[in-house]
Image 1 (cartoon, rainbow, N blue to C red):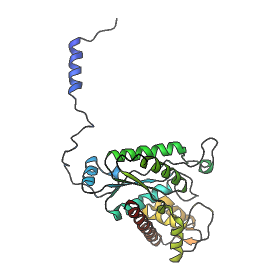
Image 2 (image 1 turned 30 degrees about the horizontal axis):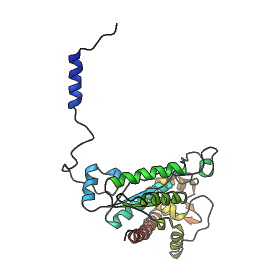
Image 3 (image 1 turned 90 degrees about the vertical axis):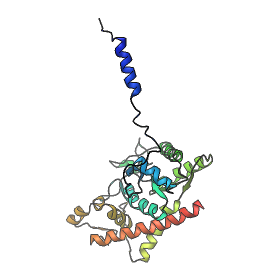
Length: 274
């Protein structure tokens, strides 16, 4: 026969569980016990550091969408996410009052079954437009709940733009808290290409879903993301007719391009928020 647990033991266990403190409910007004780190990325901050940054005037948050897709034989699947690590930090620091939400890597990349567009290539991860918009909606609502006054949407890929605009329209139709701002100027790669031409970089497209500007930006964030060492060893350290050597020079180009894109985006954000 099964053994029964004495009522006294049950009562003792209940009292212990009832007395156990809630591990996710610390004092929201508690003083931060250590010095804050210098970063604009929310995922690299503690909750107290986020709270104190907002109290100090950081009332804007950047929500950036990237992707996981094929990018030719040299660039990693997370190309857009790598670039965004560089551009979002530059944008936030230039604004001076902004933090950066975790970069959204899951975006529409084509149909899953049967596979279309990027989904034809191994490693690509796609979501439906409905899933993408639902994800962005919940992210933005979370940030609204925490008290951000301005939520800035930018996307590093063409397929990300329409969904962001729809989320903005839906949430701004019912403004309960922070306002959303979609900044299409961030994705103006035509202006980047023109800027590069004006500065002496002329390219001959090779059809590899890759170009000098993208490679340079990625190298400035993580040289391994463009397989720098492997391409040098194979004699393929070039793109669209532009030599990528010396490495230091291309990295410097990448920093300049990121700075250019950040200046353009910051100007557009400030105009939108007025």
